[in-house]
Image (cartoon, rainbow, N blue to C red; front, side):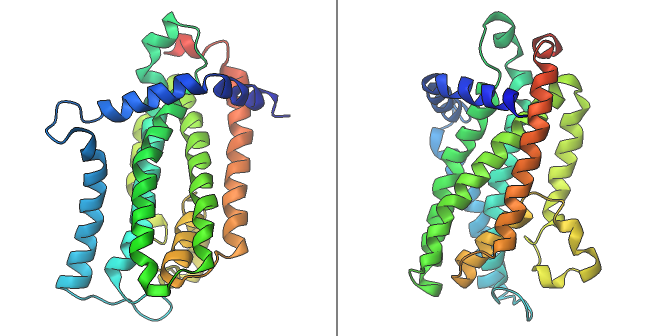
Length: 267
């Protein structure tokens, strides 16, 4: 049923050494020529989340109402915004990876999967340590809770989600360039369709189902549970995350199978 997807996974594993080299080069190339070089991809997200904390918690001391996992607005925003930035960066770069690698694929018999995988892994190498750093900053609020162990599977699942979605969108973008503009718009408004800016309790109950159309809703809620409350994420959150990945895996299997003989021509 998912034979095409398994073949892609095996091809990616065989090319793992190449992917490792390509990932390192992409990270280095993102800000080549700048004074701070490779430090910039790490500094920019940190400055953004630091601004959230300073503006909302230090300067204005804004508070959330009842039902929120924390009263501090800045602390609440940081927990959801950083994983969301990681997701947007990984998915958008993964989506554009095949188009950008068109010339290489036309001249070399490389498995296409290595390009979205490289882009997503490069983003993960940047944002993964940043999320871990933020997690350390939240330890004083609830101590060394065993729930912190759930960050490892959460980060791994978010990485897998980004690879699957990035590859799906990369194939669609190769077939139809309008995909890039549509997805760019969806990513820009997606932050409003998730519990990142506002707690889930503030959304009208009749419309909360809309939030689950965003694949990051489950992950954001999981990070909030772990970092703000110090508790293990609810089982419904894990189910929703796994359901999204299962659906994407099926879609990707179909796309890979149908595009195998035409993908290079689209590029």
